[in-house]
Length: 50
Image (cartoon, rainbow, N blue to C red):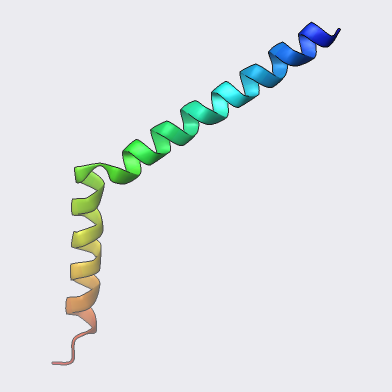
């Protein structure tokens, strides 16, 4: 019984680790940085007084 619990805990920790690494990689990606810059740039232009 204890081995089953340990395997389950290890699986959960492993899955969480993979999700964290994938999320961090996507967050740091150049494509996303460009998209954020476009969104921020558009927002700044739209809010500028004419």
